[in-house]
Structures are given as structure tokens and as C-alpha cells.
Length: 269
Ligand code: ATR
Image (tube, rainbow, N blue to C red; front, side, top):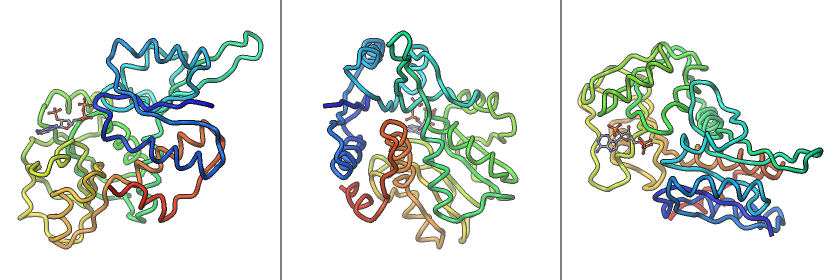
């Protein structure tokens, strides 16, 4: 039986096993997908398990998306995105050895989720909160869609400044300031806990804007709740999560499972 893993720390919250194991059953694939909490020091050994055919593929989540990169033979990622979330192997027919390749399916996940909404980014003012692991993938997708401006605000200014080195067109905003925007995106982890509050001045926003949260558990963060109550469109990170998983599944198995109501329900707690 083939084995797949998602590695991270913490890892309990991950719904990737639920999704991939469902698709294994649906597609009659003899495989199992498990989650594993690891430490930085374990990365080398786990990746060598792919080389030795003990593991077929790995998803990587916080905080290892960058630290796995030196252990790969090749990272197929854009230059300004130091983030790998999917690892697979390629057999060299001459040597018989596996080459370990990392890629990033968060990018395509966010892109598909946006396309699904039919909200056009072109010419719009985008305001991003946070500068964590997933933020570069989000910026990468947005900038391809030609917004008029991408503003970004992060509690730790240095991390926002580091992102600006990778994406010079970013306009940095002080943490706590709320600028005029058409779309606001939460990429921070604020909202995972019930009492989490983002420092957004909701009085000045008005209606008809687009509130997006990368968080999908809880289904509706306070940020989305308030956005909705003010008459804005809202979307959580569930579609992005599903599509990044689907893209990884496609890389590993060459199949593209349907995303239907069953999948959406499967992920509801
Ligand atoms: P990592 O930074 O390891 O990639 P992450 O979960 O991907 O972790 O990202 C965490 C994001 O949430 C960061 O933007 C972080 O802000 P800092 O860079 O200032 O740490 C943000 N974040 C987490 N807790 C926060 C809090 N209590 N207040 C404000 N921002 C917070």
C-alpha cells in the first residue's frame, strides 16, 4: 500500500488526510494518507523515505514550507516564493534512484478559488493583512491579475519589509491602519481562536467590498462575520484548501477528482 503524509507542527487541525483518503476510496487507489507532527531535525530522514520508496509523497504545512527546500533535488517554485507544500519523486530510469521534487500548489489553490468567485481583481485596490507562510503565494496570484494596488500590513514590520524586497510593488501600511480597499484578505492566523480580533476599522469600510479569509476552520471568523453584516461579499479559505489538495492529488496520481457538495460537506466539522 502506498503511503502519503502531511508534515507540520502543530498538525492536529489538518484536514488533508480526510480529503485525500476520501479521494483514494472514490478512485480505488490502494493508499493511505496520514498526518505527522515533526521537528525540524526530522525533515532530512522523512525526505529520504521518499528516496527509498517508503513514502510516495508529502504535503508540507506550517512552519516547514521553507525549511524543506534545502533537502530537495529540485524546487519548482517561482523565484520570489520560498515555499513548498507538495513533494513528489521522479524515477531516474538509468540510475534507478528517485529525484525529490518540491512544488507549491497553494498558488493554484488560491487562483482557482478566486476564479470560482468571479470577482475581478483587475484595477482593484487590494489590502492584505499578514506576512506569514502563505502570503507570498497570495501576492503572486494577485499581481498576475493586475490590481491597481496591493497594500500590505503586518504586526511585525520587518516581515512586511522582507516581502516588499520580493514584491517591490507592495505598498506597506502601518499595522492597525485601515486604508480604502475593494478587497481585504486575512492571511494571519488571527481568527483561529474565537476571541481573536483583527485591528480593522470597520466603521470606514461601507458595503459591496470583498472580504476573504484564508482560515476555513472555523467556517466563519469574526472578520468574515462582521464583513458580511456590513453588506460585503465574504469567502473563507476552504476552496483554496480543496484546490491545493486537488492539485497535489493530480501531481501524485494523474487524476482530477470532482469538487462537489460531498467534498464541501466532508470538511465541515
Ligand atoms: P509563519 O510566520 O511561521 O509563517 P503563519 O502562521 O504562516 O506563521 O503566519 C502568521 C501570521 O499571522 C503573521 O503575519 C503573524 O504576524 P507576525 O509576523 O507579526 O508574527 C500573524 N499573527 C499571528 N498572531 C498574531 C497576533 N496575535 N497579532 C497580529 N498578527 C498575528
